[in-house]
Length: 405
Image 1 (tube, rainbow, N blue to C red):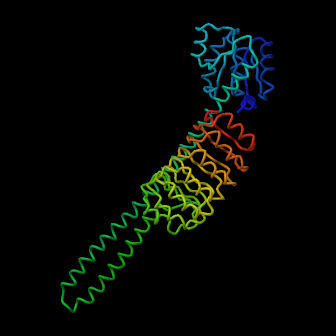
Image 2 (image 1 turned 90 degrees about the horizontal axis):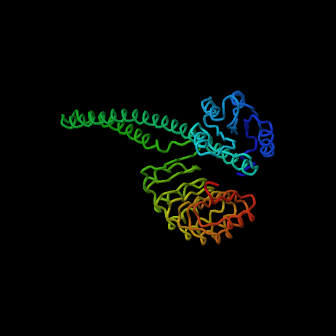
Image 3 (image 1 turned 120 degrees about the horizontal axis):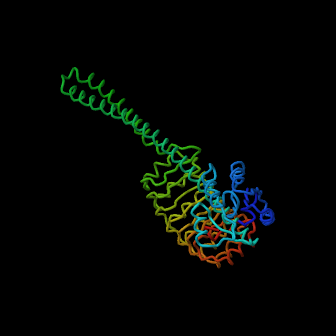
């Protein structure tokens, strides 16, 4: 994000008792598209801030009435302003003054006489930090909401299994009673034997059927899905379990096996999922030898292989998935040679190569991916120069080599 982008539409409050200083800072900042609010005293700053809720405040230190330090302290105590960055604009550079400014809540200093480049750079930097902090808060809130929903779902599951468990125990108890009755009937006289056995065996059969239905309900619970989605993330699922888990789910579109015990042998059970569009195999024991099985999934759009032992050889099989839109290869063993296979995926839109061994040399293989819109190269050996070459070849693609950029 450029300086002008971070400052566009930002609300900036400038506080200074000298009109000339206000005009100077306005002329520096306004071309970036921000909205400027003025205050000529600390008291006025408190009023303006309460009504405008600025994104950032530039505050003079030496003012009549309450000075900048006291104004900052009061601003920080106001509702909605505790996280608003406040920058002091002052000619005072004594260490004691600087320390006092930070102690009352200031985040930075701009020294007078102000320099336009410095003002724009510092204001932009703190606006970016504020925006990132707000994003983080939203993400945390979303995570808390998701956590609450998952807890509610888990409680529903527990109630379901508890109810089924009680019914199962009742049925098993009935089986036990009828078994005793059979034994008693067998011990009776021959004349009574036939009728007694017939009745008790019939009752036993009914109870057994009920137990079977209840068991099916219990086993069916992990397969409950919404919109043809089955998420088995971080379960104790094994290869043999997978066969049952996907039975009857031929129309499945999303399947996550991330962090399960699935190996190459388990992938054979996916061949029936011809409508599968998204498959997550991250952090499983799948290797290159298992990937040919994925060629049997013609509808696959997203494939997540991060944290697996997949290498360049395995990508030759992945290249057969011509409809693939997203490919996640974080922390795999691929190198530039593997990108030659990736370059055949003409419909690819998202490619994540985080923490892999690719370099600038491998970027040439990706220049043919005209539909690519997002490329993550964090933690690779790709340089700014290599990334820029790719940006030139693919102007609509967001090429990122630095997580913090």
